[in-house]
Image 1: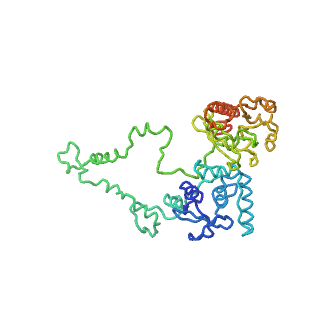
Image 2: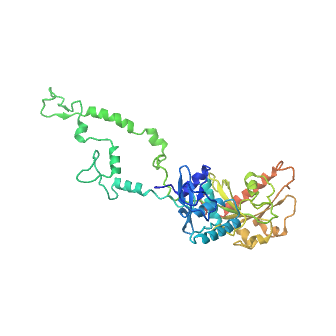
Image 3: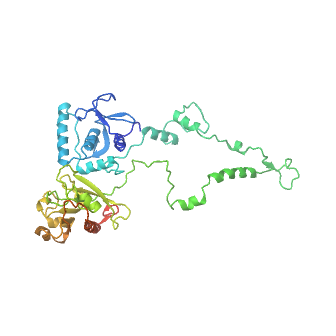
Length: 436
């Protein structure tokens, strides 16, 4: 392409720990600014390049290309909670409106924001919201002209140079032709230092016979030397390559515009209640590491998490990536089909914004999980919801003792994952997602 894609530049700069800076003009020497309402360009280094902040990117939201300003703003706010992110976007849009009235930051829904951040961090190699790169127009045109698929300069025989027959040679094609190996015609190939004319076996004079025959045995020997070098070995052609599959050229990168089906990520909903033993601040250490720690009381933790888990009966080779959130306020209708588990404290107000607000109906559609202290009685509401809710208990946290001796937590976690896997399998989850 004529210039590197801004999304790729941003991802590469993040991987290299060389964050770009916002400036008030395209001049590389202009002063940087942290105010996105005043900034007009995003400047990268190594190599140095500046993009206008209103540049459309390949990230698509609501069938519309998201501009670079919105992408950079979402990355800056990757660790803030959803309400804070929305409030900051509204505040920035008010500043932009008072400045020029045309620029605006697009507010990404939480799944789009999570997908973008995951891709920029390098944790994912593909995104369902990012279009594939378009091939370079000049390279495509050159390939079409060279193959004769498009108009331009007609194909010139090997060895042609400059103009022939009044036609002008495209400089790019001429460069290709200059690198070709010059091949002779039929007559020049058959010439050699050894004679190719001999008499029949009964003739005493090989050269005076009236009926000579052609002997090209020496040519066959010379050709065999070259053919043996280029001919692939039997082991390579019969054993190395799978039957029915063409060989892959490692020097040719895969076409980034080729679309691949991406397996949808299952979703786990947590309770936002302050009395819940498991919240976003400690759920990952519990489900991923098998150790319970008390939740943090601060509100600075991330509002979206993801973790991976291998479920052998669903896909024995690829771990599934789970999305963990404590509110469905940014859900699209189809996201509810991906909800596989709901952690609850037994308080029905938790389900107020859910698609299924009746607990009995909800826990027919998703597995309910109640985690309490070992030895304590279950809430009456949880008992009344029946077999759709898995109830487990963990040892009480002892201050000063820390995580030492919490070996039973792992047993509880494995039991939870076992029920989640069983429930997902019963609902039709397969290697490629729900019903696949």
